[in-house]
Amino acid sequence: MYKSNFTYNMSLFIFGILLISLNLNSSTVEISKYNGNNTKTLLVKYGEQVFENEKCYKCHALNDEDAKWGKKSLEAFGGKRTSAMISAFLDNPKILYPKTRMPSFAQLQHEQLNKNTLKTVLSEDPISDTELEIAWKTINKQADELTKTINLDKAVEHKKSSQTALIAFLQSLP
Ligand code: HEC
Image 1 (cartoon, rainbow, N blue to C red):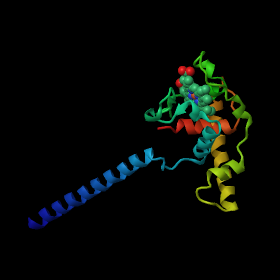
Image 2 (cartoon, protein in one colour):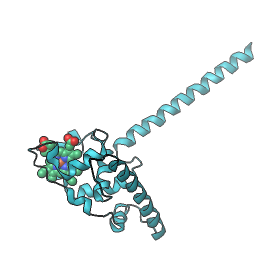
Image 3 (cartoon, rainbow, N blue to C red):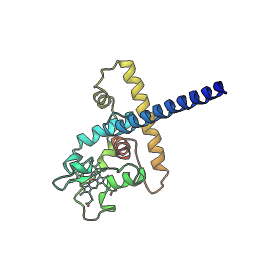
Image 4 (cartoon, protein in one colour):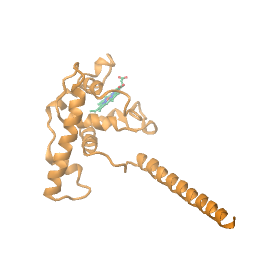
């Protein structure tokens, strides 16, 4: 009797520990999602750089809190629209907002992804040439996949480009 009670208590105890560690685990995931340390794909990181280069931040904030002076917040934009729709919108923002002051970013479809930009994007931690080659292959694979998905929508013609990375970034916005 004593023994089985002990086993029962022990298993409750272990179950409790398991629950607590699961909980801790999920809260770290939650925190990292907002401090920008989540495992972003290379394509998303590259797209963040395109967002910088194109100065989208002049008119946009990435969260509601920073959306002052008439800046339009892109908080929680990820997943709101299909990637094909975003591509068509970046080509011609007037398809969604006929009177918008947002300019066209169609030219980004003519700008190929390039290794030097990728190197800059990864410069937080210096990498060897071999690692850069691997990253270059990876990002191209990610871009090929997204391009393929976008082109499933027959109304849109999308070229693998800086715009592909920008779309990946926009789709990642929490
Ligand atoms: C001159 C200002 C301006 C610039 C520059 C600008 N935008 Fe916008 N953008 C807007 C405005 C304003 C809207 C909201 C639509 C409206 O009311 O006109 C908008 C809307 C959007 C939306 C939401 C579209 C939707 O689905 O409703 C996205 C995404 C977006 N912009 C991305 C970008 C990106 C990426 C860049 C840079 C490559 C950029 N914008 C540059 C002004 C700008």
